[in-house]
Amino acid sequence: MEIELQDYRMHYEISGDPEGEPLLWLHGWSGTGQDWKYIFKEAPAGFRVIEPDLRGHGSSSGFHGVMSFRQLALDIFALLDHLGIPRLKAMGLSGGGIVLLHMATLDSGRIDSMILISASPYFPEEVRVVQRRFSLTTLSESELKSMRERCGSGPEQLDWVIEQAHNMAATYDDVNFTPPLLGTITARTLIVAGDRDPLSPARLAFEMRSAIPRSALWVVPNAGHGPVFGPSAARFAETAAAFLRGDWPNP
Image 1: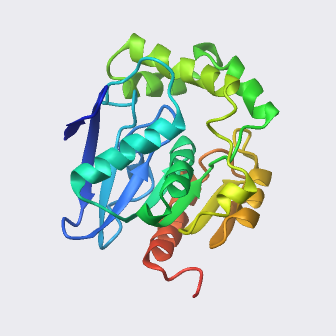
Image 2 (image 1 turned 30 degrees about the vertical axis):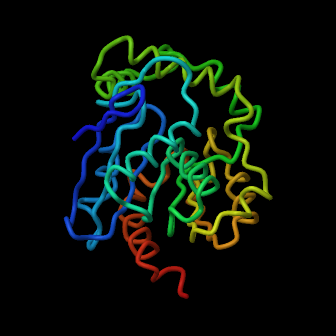
Image 3 (image 1 turned 90 degrees about the horizontal axis):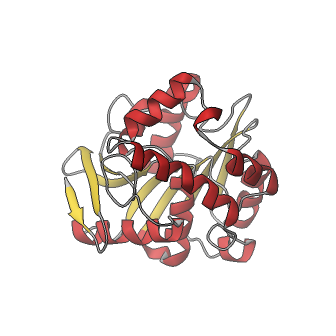
């Protein structure tokens, strides 16, 4: 499915129970809306999963100019308005989690509960160094193949995605969630972090846990960026479903 926004065409899919509670999945930088399927064998019971490809990613257009996470949040608001969804639950991975932070601070009434996975309230200097140095040559052969498959529109889209990493390193106002701003978030929030994440250091997760009022923290041991994939996927799927239902942590 597609929706025409002001300056680009957004691709999105909807899976799960057609009558279920809406659940938004936001992928990370260079990902696609289908990435949740690497974690869940099927949509969590009782939920209707909304899976957009963010601006410039996957099958969406818009790979031109400079991307901002705040603009991505406004894009998602437009999609939800189009679908007639005033309030929902959400999961966001990495950059998708940053988009959720913008949504939760721009309009706190839109998100009932959310899961932030490897999300950062700001980019510390050691992360900016990685962003500045990122190029195709820093990828393994399998990572490069995966990125090319995700950028179905070809080299122009792939180049744009890489350029956005460099833009993130040079921008300071877009990802700048101070403790007072995080304190305005009303959504129940589960923060998930890997203790060996070089792109979103675990200390940032502890800072968010201290600042977001109704939050819980799960640090996955011996895990890097995106700790909910691979060996931890099954446990995360179970925990996430319980959290979204309101069964965990025990109220």
